[in-house]
Image (tube, rainbow, N blue to C red):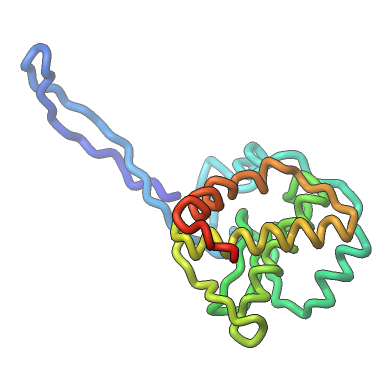
Amino acid sequence: MRWGGTIRKEQEDPITGETEEKFFNSFRWIKGFSLDCFDDSESDNKIADVIDKYRGPENLDPRIDDAEWLISSQDADIQHGGNKACYSPSRDQIRLPRFEDFSSAELYYSTAIHELIHRTGYESRLNRDIRNKFGTPEYAFEELVAELGTAFVCNELGLMPELEHHASYIEDWMALIGSDTKAFF
C-alpha cells in the first residue's frame, strides 16, 4: 500500500447548508513480489515491525515425512512466499505461503495437496478445463474436484486439516448442484 496524500474537498452540510472543508486520506495498492523490493530506511515505520504486528504465531509443527515425499515426488514447480496459495495453469506453477506461516502442518499439507490436485488438470496431464472464472459453475466444479481429491489424499496420509477452510467451498458446490442436477453424472 502506498500513501497517496491528503485530498481537500468542500462539501455542503445537508443539515446546516454551510460549506465545510473535509479532508480525505488516500492510499493506493501497489504490487510487490518480495519485501526486498521496498526500502524503508527513510521511514519511521519499518516493514518488519508491521509484519510482526499482524503475523500470527509461527507454525512450529514438525514436517510430516509421508506428505513431504508425496509433494516432492510430483516434481511440481512450487514457489514459497506471499500470503496466498494458488495454482497458475499458464505457468504450471504452484504458489504457497511458507510452511511456518500456516497455523498447522496439516493446513499447509492440505493446501499444498489441494493445489497439486488442480495441477492434475493441466493439458499434458488430465486436460481438465481449469482456466475458469470465479463464481462460474465450471470453477465450482474444479474446486469440488480439488477438495474431494484433497480429502482422499489427506485421509490416506492420516492428516486431519481444519474443516472451516474446506467448508468455505460448499456454497459454490450447492449452487452448481442447484443449477445442474446432472453436474456430477
